Length: 448
Figure 1 (cartoon, helix red, strand yellow):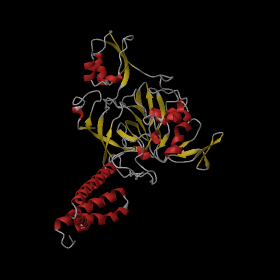
Figure 2 (cartoon, helix red, strand yellow; figure 1 turned 120 degrees about the vertical axis):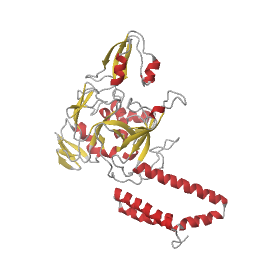
Figure 3 (cartoon, one colour; figure 1 turned 45 degrees about the horizontal axis):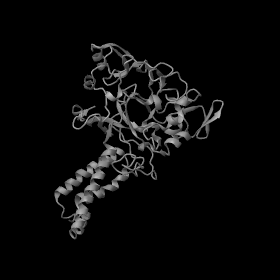
Figure 4 (cartoon, one colour; figure 1 turned 90 degrees about the vertical axis):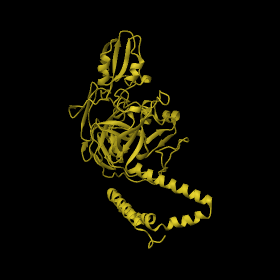
């Protein structure tokens, strides 16, 4: 069909799609994409390419079928990839670090527009997968082409107490035989050679191909955080007691355990709690404030006491496990005070604060750092005693405070690691149950 013979609907369709396309270009600010307007014109008005494909397909039934499938596949890949990059992406909760707020087996839709979508830094990547290919486990991307970090303006910024999905800060180096474990923890507790020999070889991943985590942001850039006896304080103010936050308690009973059916109905993960006959009771029962009140009302419960980790840290924690991985006198329940770095703010570098900021300087912000001796430092070849931060940073904690590897164990989360904000639980399954009882129907389409 020629342009001259095109009907009015085609032109209307072109105007609408072109307007949306130009608005999208204005949003992310790269006006070179205007060269894509002829493609929209071709599909909406000219259709010369489609006419040529139709003529070729008419000569062979097999060609027609292949053409139809190819057209559908290309359309699906382009649309889904576009949505994943700029609007929302599916994510599954892999662990219990956020229970009882977000449960293991929850499937989330994560909004990219909440904080602004990041443009791809590693564009040569297979669609529909994040960093590894199914079955083979090999990388699903190539680092032959890399772009600098850039984020498009979103509807807001990360705020205290937000649920946030982000790239795992220590995920730049991964042990092939233990990809879910922290490489740097292995190195600190044993040695680099032992870690690689036992669990290697290692894989190095760019920022946008690190594994995704979800936690609650408890402190934003410029805040001062402190944890006292398990209670989080930010700038001297106690954190709000959100319903899903839980700590472990020592629950003493009269010698009989609590009915397992009652525990399951109260939302406990039965695989993560245990009853001690010698106590008698539960040495480390995770309780929210609501669950604590219910337990206090049970006839066979004698006492409930919160577990608080005082110095030295309880096993398996140690000063090699807790950020900044040096002697601080901190534990997971008595932590800080710690200032969260903010963009544009400067610090005087000292031997005391260097463990807090060195990874930021070298890894997250890409500088060459040298210790010249006697408290003297050089950054990118120039001697200096100060450093000015180039990004905002955040401190993340899981709501399951005694079963969460979070910023207390790997430090600050850089702004360029932020992926998005969970908005809705579209599916939730319990791995301890069989179908259809494994579906948590009450959590389906639950907005967060």
